[in-house]
Length: 161
Image 1 (cartoon, helix red, strand yellow):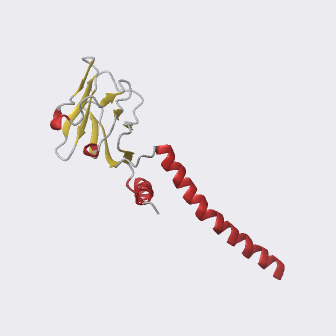
Image 2: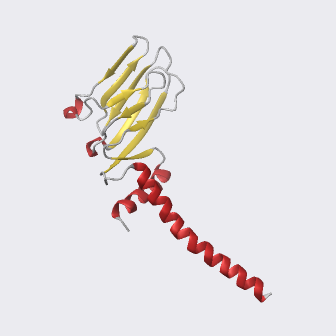
Image 3: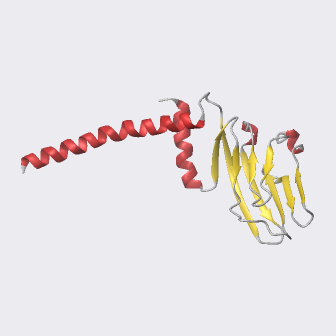
């Protein structure tokens, strides 16, 4: 079985176990959703990255100001970050492996904090939909013989009665 497919299936399992872990194929975009319906007018929302929590983006609703700090961390986020001004969700475009890591979003007035961990899978040359199709195909390839065995056992059991 293709190593990338095994890694992808492992990441799907880990995503369910770890909760807010997000996997993305290198070169694709990923959006980290805050889950907020709307940022209040008095709130300042901040996005931070990495172990030392470098600030990478901020929305100050009271001042009507949005700031993206793309030049922090050697410019790794330059021209790659987009903020949803209503919900505060962060989109990273054209991801690279250096974007993998821990992200945190918080607001200053309303007590809100949420953490994410992004895993960037090296590009395989396949699109996300092609990888998903392969995963579905593998699952069907495993499920079909199992269903056949179950049918055969049921049929044989019924004939014996």
